[in-house]
Length: 132
Image (cartoon, rainbow, N blue to C red; front, side, top):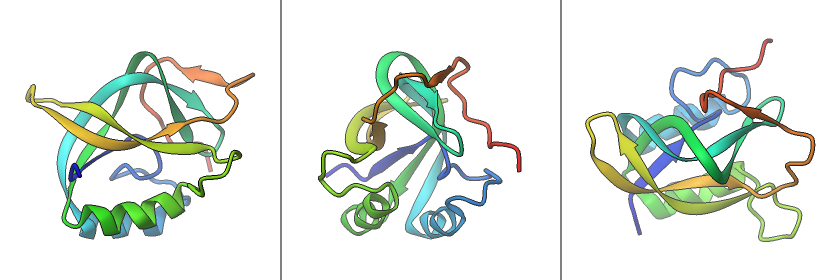
């Protein structure tokens, strides 16, 4: 199991968003932040948080090396609402994450699988926290 996690939304370090505060703090202890990274995909604006879909484009975020991947991914799956039911918004998948220094790592990330009908793309590939 890859020990890396690519984050792009409420789990990003430094994000000032009420959603995910506890999980961001817990993730800081559960892994080492390796720095800014990007992967292939497109970001959608879901309102209070973004969703990445597998489509042409680049999604910017950050990369963690998890100390205990199985344990950390279990509570992250719960945070992201992964239940295995047909109405889940996300699925966890492996992607290639590219660090700023040119290194590429296999990493887990959460891919949006809900309906994208009527949702706006975030053309920059960078999520900014919504206004309070």
